[in-house]
Length: 300
Image (tube, rainbow, N blue to C red; front, side, top):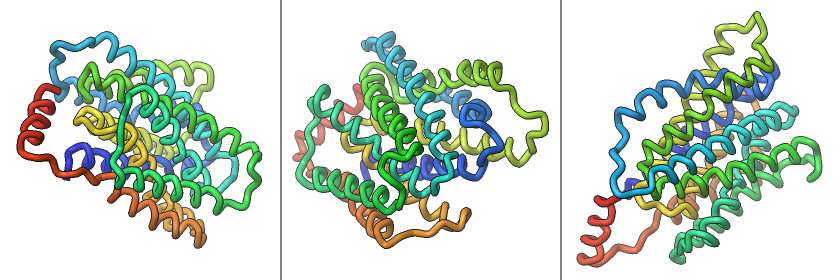
């Protein structure tokens, strides 16, 4: 199994857990407050990143850092809008599945600006993943232009651009360093949010714990996807894999929240699993090609 694929799967699982916790917290905290408190869960990941980060050599580290910081700003805004959509009363399975369409934005940007190419099997994988996301979406009985869907379009756009900037960042700095700068943005954002919206005085320990766990899995997922990018994974492949986190979130929503899975969602889950297998497919290189690939990996 390629290293980038293993890290992509870790991102998928981490984000699948993260995506459902906001629904558990409910209306006890505003979307912005959820974002602020969850930052505490990111601190362990932020703390270890300087210890495991690789030294930069021969790269434009300033440009890479700027890209990572910009991705952090967009990612933070995307999270707040996501929590807002999740709190509108719609089923978590529907919100999670719709917002998972954000890889479309990253794929388009990657093909247009990074000249990324896909083999035929990987193209089929992308078709499967998009079909799965579509089936997750149309399983909802809600109207197309309901307020929560309008809100859900914001994280789709913001997260899609975030994924593109993260890939650009890892072209100049290591995945660990890129993740560090990406997550650091969330700390001052949390301070600003709490100044504007102070926390309620009677916030229970259970809510604190849920919010911290939510932040930890979000940070872990971002570390995993950036490590996948840094291992020469294609943005147009990694992002759809990580965007299939509803295959984790939906079973959790059924078990923890008592939500139902429609027939269309069941078909979507099957297509999602098929897409993960297809997206991981790479033609085996010849021996000279394998040596060149290994040398390229070492230099990155």
